Image (cartoon, rainbow, N blue to C red):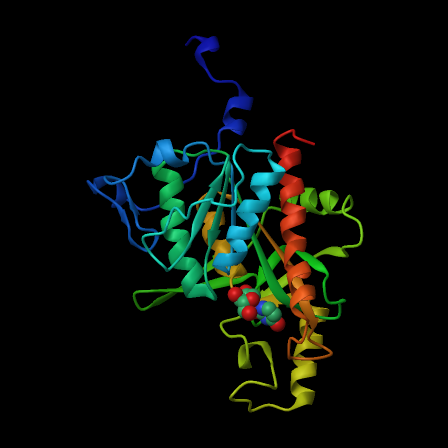
Length: 309
Ligand code: R2B
Ligand code: URA
């Protein structure tokens, strides 16, 4: 065979496609991404999204809009960016903004909500024939044994038993999936964080739960059936297992992105230290500033990757 016809090793490494692992998709003559109000017949997805290289997801629609506006300024794109349009305006389930190669998408709260969004987002990236996509969840969390306002870059997402797994119920089976994240990406993000002053940042395990109250050992929900001692014992065991923060989406995010070939990271700011309290009593301004910390880190990282700084 002709050697020169073969793509060299670098070509393989450079092009990393977004995989869907569903034999039925190819046979569908139209795919409607219902919760995003997009579809393969109604929209030219390759033209709209083919150049996407970074996808940032986060729970709140307003925060993801603010992130898109911030990215617009940071990337020095044309126009003022204030009137940026919601690509998913036809639905109020999720919102989506595009600034150059950066897509900003909201996912709501909890595993079921982010999982629905990820199914449709990953199909969107596949239909648009995107390659080399990095996806980052920027969010909030409760810290364990670290100062409020710290940013935690997740190395491994773990479940409520501190295990690196996500259990997906499929028909009436439980399928266990790995929640390993991209270690190299986590390290790159950590190195990038060193250049941002006054924001304590660390790498650690992130625990993902199905609930904010009883599921995170809180004493202040409408229901609580355990003692303060049991709560603290649980959180301290989590700390000893390497857990530094708790949130509600990381395991399914890591599992789905891993299976679909997306380079993925989770970067969350902590709003409180759960060894000290359960209620979040930060002032509006402090909360706003804390929530900007992951955004600042990710925008610096993206600018670096694009060779803009
Ligand atoms: C972090 O914050 C939300 C709960 O307040 C939830 O979406 C999460 O993971
Ligand atoms: N998000 C969570 O899931 N838990 C917290 O304690 C704070 C934010």
